[in-house]
Image (cartoon, rainbow over all chains, first blue to last red; front, top):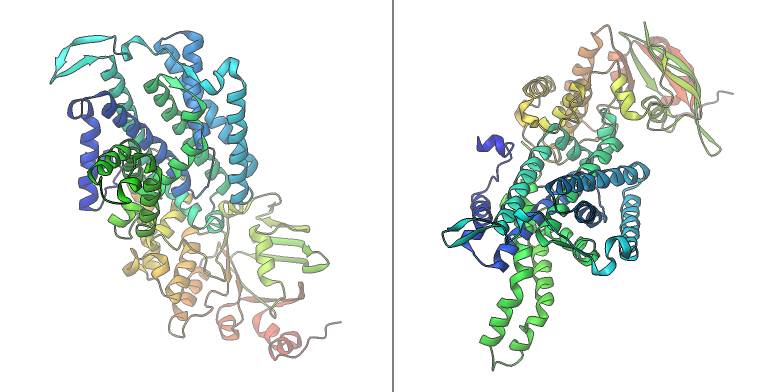
Length: 356
Length: 252
């Protein structure tokens, strides 16, 4: 049963299994285990980023395609839902239509970019995605009448997803309200999308992508039309990123260029893929969880450490919460240095990309 | 029956004519050795047939149908199969997975996304059969990059056997293999020869191999077809004697 659900792609490492079970339980029970606005928000972000990072890994780790447009697809999904909700009012129909429209648009743009540039050298595709992503970023901030420009848009989501909607008293001290439903919408959708991607990478299609990544020349020579496979992977990855974007917009009840389209976000995604381990969807779980937690709580830990070391020369300054980016950077350099195949790759002891 | 035909097949790189109006037909059940000195255009001729290089002029026909405009993968699916001179496999995948990928393509399930690859038992079984045929069953789980050169050559031939095209093209299949390993590959090719519905093209330098396997020899020199006939005749001919004795050819 579990084997089927996980498409036969088991973690193949005890420590990794333990980590994944802890993360799964943590996310599944987050509102009850860690009540509090901030911790539940972190859990929702982790769920969404797992999907986003896994969809990027589908492209980078499996198909071997470098793209800088992944946040653009994420943004298209987010704006898709936001704009539709604005135009049609706060109904579920708007959510559904907006989500599908966002995913469809993302896949269509990916198709056009893919057909134009996947034929030629890989670096060309990367450049095109960079150009298109920048263009879309500029467009979104300039078309302020439609998109709210740099300020973004606050959106009205269906009432059932807001704290104002109550459907009972309390369960284990947690209020049963729309926010809880919203969390489980995010978690459930993310879980389904994750399992779907796990299935895709272990399907004949996923195996073909690995072959294309390994040796596109030979893949073509044994009869696989490489460009079509690359394009399909790009579209699929774009559509899933857009779905993650739609979830993010619903969760935050806000979209803005800084939150869903920025270059920093693109680099964050890249880092999460590399830290977790490229070429394994499990890597996305580890990478996204570590990264989002570090991003949200490193400052606090440092504030505490800084206060604790007061009186010692230099240390409190180094540990000042304002320097958190320095430490985050240092953590990444070290993790990439010590785990070149990512944490999952390391835990699987070098067997990370050999599908059995 | 003629399976493969090239008509005035030509490719120019700038001013250099690498393959010069080669017209030749290859019949089913026949193994044709293609010989000629280095730089004669043998591998380029292969590249033109399998589609890696577009022809400047002329055409390739498979069972009477022109392959013009077809991509490499479309030609592979149509029945042109190619093994490479320099081993060209999927180095970080297992031996079994390399063969399974070929079988998966033939089963036409490359785009199947919602079933696991291992659920397609028949594809896996067929890959296992080829593993046995090329005597690599013991090393099925090895990554290709962990294999010895000789085993990689065997797998290279195995990939083609798995694809089972109408036209088999081997480019120096035993290059760099030790004397006790080469016979395995040559036996495999001889077994293929027994099949009356396949044509085999073999680029080879070793005369003993050619003498053992070939039904016919064609000679390329400076891109042009200069001789064509049964092995005994061609080997005895002046052209081949001179080419392989290291003397300069004077064909004009």
